[in-house]
Length: 325
Image 1 (cartoon, rainbow, N blue to C red):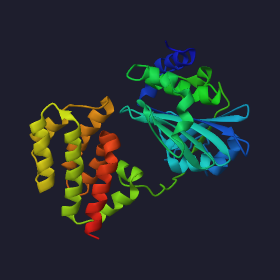
Image 2: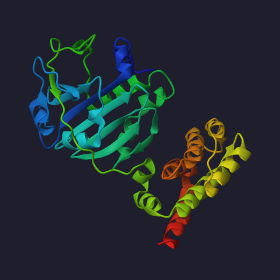
Image 3: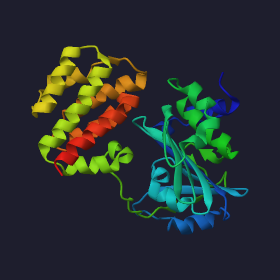
Image 4: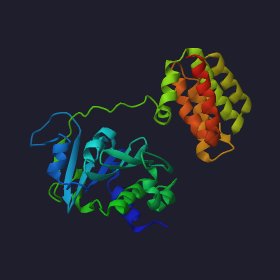
């Protein structure tokens, strides 16, 4: 059953269909310091937009609701960047929801400069951060919406549930925020340099192993990737097991496969685990065939596909890189 909050945001988004192309909404709440519009403008080094301002850069709109501040973007995703959250959450609690036109997006919770939890918009079981369990008690709506047309509205309802703050529909116009309807202040965000980060998802979970493999000789890196994807095809059943085996052999020998074969691999299905494991298994196989360092990226998907078996495979991969110094 759809909750009242989810229904509210479903109507909100239906009436503003342009927001399907992208949205970023943050609720900033006081913790060790108060949350004010002027304070957030200062900490983000943003500047107010004056009439006639035509300079480049991302725009954001801010409004005060009691002790809390709303920050809204209908064409930008700066609010979800770790670098921005680090400053936004200085002395405050910050919840954000964001998505892009291609369907990607997530929910983030940051406190005192740390991202405690991030959750995939489309898969509430996919979470990471310093404390991903912080979301555990508030997942009913997003779990119920998974795979339905309510995913985005449930994500917005999740932010409201966590903060007690609703994004007022009456403050929105046909073009976006309405300065006449709400206490909005428009600012232009400066360029905030990216924090150091790994080159792939695998490096997020296994930074040392990722770095060692990227600096290892090509034959060692290739053997490591082949070993991981071979473990994947041994754990799961593919719709074409022979094609999966051929792909692993190509990785092991450093062979290039043609586009038709790559397309056939993309269309494989895998069973033997949950839906996520099957999708990750196919992704690992396809990514492993990439040139150069791209093969290392396959290990992130292989890690998820292998589940508990990953620990044994991880030991094998460390053994490979250590043998080569």
